[in-house]
Image (cartoon, rainbow, N blue to C red; front, top):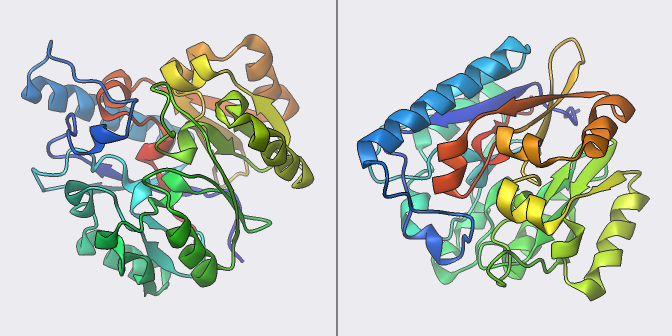
Length: 305
């Protein structure tokens, strides 16, 4: 039986973190910073990465760190997009850009497959070059208890790939349209929605109006307390990009960036920490999220035993 809140995550320490021109086509959250050299950006990113790993370990969360040795994978710090372990298989996912496809390292997924004693499922890769894209738990925000996956459709979350995911996983998907700061479809579901065991953080106003209430109703039917966040919190502060974890003592944590934490209202923090008994871990990853266009949740791929 797979636990619904993981106690362990995989993280990838980058060799050459930086602005990814290939993904900038549909990720409106990326920013190019010319005030730093490429070397400076890499050094700062490593400091932020290592500090985040230490902060998680200090709370009793297990972190398996893999070192990336590829210079042409500027987004390798975001491994949650290319594999998942929440089903009975280790699933590999189709990626939108050529340089992100290079992140799927056999040395990583074969080791995880062996350690977890789970077979590798590559069925979603068969039509990757035809544009059937589904970028892991960036595209899929899952309630593991009910086997329900919420998916904001975009060039990185395609209906045909979702159909195939349902067939191999036994999950049902709730599909909707959500728009980002540039007026285009939001690139990943997990920047506007965070699923926890008893609550969900939801950028409700980013969802198309005639689909909004259906999404909220589905979440409510799953027993989730819907904590709404504003478009400003989603678009400018990554307040939808969080991950719930726990340690072996059963203590529950909600991991987010320091920027996201600072953007939450005192009422939202109170609901998370007091009503739902989750300690907040706020990690300072300013350069990573500013340049990479992804935040704390994107940096962690859950390991389900």
